[in-house]
Length: 343
Image (cartoon, rainbow, N blue to C red):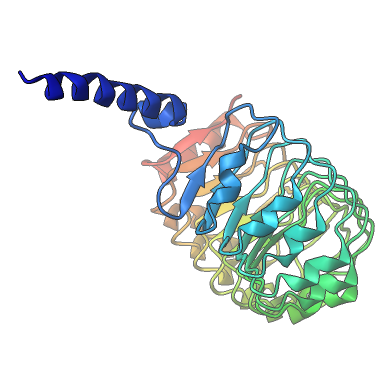
């Protein structure tokens, strides 16, 4: 081996060792957190964002979720190509004004932080399609949120909202709206204008009636009205022809209107913890139903039409005063169904 080669080998070895030192830990293990346009730093117990992030101007997708971040530097404005930003599950109480100037953003997740104010500058995110602010400390939303006309998905659940700006209900492109667990007083008719909704979560809002025309939301596939004070189904419920998932558990329903039979695409129906004593025979029209929860009601028997539900796989009847003889009859009508009478 020549002396020149002998000199080069130690030099190459030094370069290799130096490379290992500067690479992130996961990259050394073959799990690099970064590709050309994607950087994932989720769950790293970070208290500060690493400086090398600000040098990645081509980044489109940045995940900083599940860390201990309390501050987002103004340098975030350098990431002008950013389309997806996940800051969920941190300790953020505020955000820099520079964040709202990232006009390429399409997805922004701020869930599970300590944010109490959403600034009016949010209106500048004109390309935003998916916004999650659930589980923060918001008590109001700025009217400027109505400027986000490209928004398709909005989650503002688990906050302290007592009212909503009228402009919010002008977001006609919304497909998914999660609003549950807020101390809101709201009329259902506000939602009528959002007639492109496919997913609507209104659990835990203490609704006692659904005034308005729910039939206008005829693209709904998922509707969660659980943990409210509803005593009956809304009018024109039978127009929800595409509904596949319906949750009405923990309300005050004493009867179920025959219009439930018109929701023929239903696959999941939760009616637990109500005051139902019987079901309408039209329940047998729900031929696609695979899961039915009826626990903790006042039911003593089921209509014979229940036997038509040949796709039913799970039926929960715990907490109902159903006699043993009736239980055996139900089992015979649904021989391929997992039926639970006891807890």
